[in-house]
Length: 576
Image: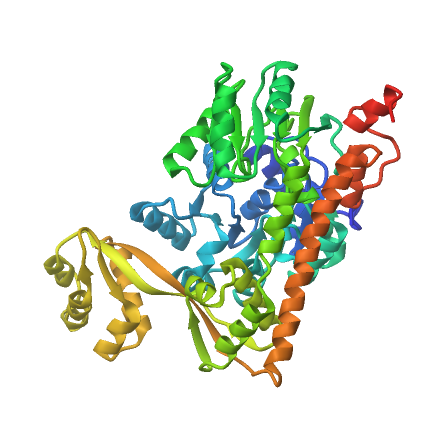
C-alpha cells in the first residue's frame, strides 16, 4: 500500500491521463494518492482508497470514467454529494446523472434515456436503488466499466457503520460483470481496509492510503457537565472570530433547542436534522454553503457530502459514536487548509446515553430463536416485509437485516432481487389514449390491468402479485407493462412495500444452536460498539497528543506531536 509498484515505469495511458486532468478538470497535478489510484483503474485493476475527508476521492473515479469504454456507476448514500458533484461536472461539460428519490418521473426518464444512448458516462445512485428490481435489470444490460462504492467501510462488520446491503453491492458488481471496482472511504482502520479488499476481491497491493494527519486542525476537549455545557459552548463561540460553524448533537430535539439558544444571543444559527421537511433541509444547506458566519446545529445527518472548504469550527456538543465518526466529522473543518478549531464538550452523561443505544440494538436470545423458527420452518421461497417481521419478532429492522445477511453467509439462505409488492400511479392521460397507443393485440391485457387498479383521491394502486393471479399471468408481465407505461410518459409510477426475497438452501440440524450462534454474533457486535465508545473517551481523557493518537487508530504513526491539541497545550503550559 502507499507507493505504486509501477513507479518509474512507462505507462501508455499517461499522456491521456494528464491531458484529461488538465483539459476537463483544470488541474496541472494530482493530489497525494490520486495518480496511483487512477493508474490502477485505467489499467483495469480494482482498487481501494483511504483518503481523509476533502482529499479528492471523487476525481479518482470521475477521471477514469472519461477514459474507459462503458458506464461508471457511483454508489453513495450521500444525496448532497451526488447533487454537488453533478453540478460541478455539468459546469465542466461532463454528462452525469443521479438516480434518487428526489427526481420526478420526467427527470428520471431523461436520465435513463441518457444512459441508454451512451451519452451519460457517470451515474450516481444510492445503495437503496438496488432494491428496485427494474433498475437492477436495467443495469445488468449495460456495460459497466467501473463500479465505484463510496463509504466502503460500511461493508465491514468491523467498521463503525456496518450496512448489510453493502454486502449485496459486492455480489451485484460481480453478477453484473463490472470490469473493475473502486472502493473508497475516509475512515478505515487497517482491519477494515483488509475486509474491504477481501469482500470486493481487491488485491491488497492495489489499496492506497494517504496521510491521515492534518496540521491545520486544532483538536480540543473541554470537560463539562449537563448544567454547564451551554455556558461553555457560548464561551467558546465568544472567544473566537465568527466563521462557518457546525455544532453536532445526538438527537433532533437538542438540535432544535440549542439552535434557538444560540440564535437568542444574536448569532445566525439554524437547526438541521433528518426529521425536518426536505425543502427546509435543502434551504438550510444552501444557506450554510453561502454563509460566512452561519452556525448549523445538526445531527450527523448534516455535513456528509457538503462541499464547503471554509468551515472554521466543528464542535461536538454531544459525543460522537466512535473514533471513525469523530474523525469524519472534524474532517469537515478547514478543508481550505487554513486553521480550524474542533472542540468536544465531554459530558459523562453522553457516554451513558450512547451505551444504552448500543445495548438497545441487541435483541433477546428468545427473540432470535423466534426469528429462526419463523424463517426456516416456512416455505422454501420467502418474501419478507422487514418491518412487519421486525414487529413480530421484536427485533429492530436493521438488526433483522443483519441476521438475514448472516444466514446468507452461512449458506442457509440465498437472497434474490427485492421486489415491490404493490405499486401506485397517477395517470398522465386517459385510458382511451393509453389503449390507442398500443397494438390491438396488447390492448386487452392493458385494459385488464388498468381495470384491476383501485382509485383513491389522487393515486391508483394495485398489488402486482394479486393482479397477476387474477389474470393468470406472470407477475413480471404486470410489472413490465407498468414500467413501459411509465417510460412512455403515460403514468407517474411508484413502487411500494419492498419485499425481500430469499431461497432456503438448507435447514439447520439444530435450530436452537443456530439461534445461539446468531445471538452470539450480535452480542459480539454490541461489544465492539461499546469498545468504540471506550476508545473515543480514552482519546479525550488519556494523556498524549490527540492528533497522533487518532492517527494511530487508522494505522498512521507520527513521532512529532501536533503542538496545538488540548493535550499538547496543557503539556506546553507545564500542566499534568
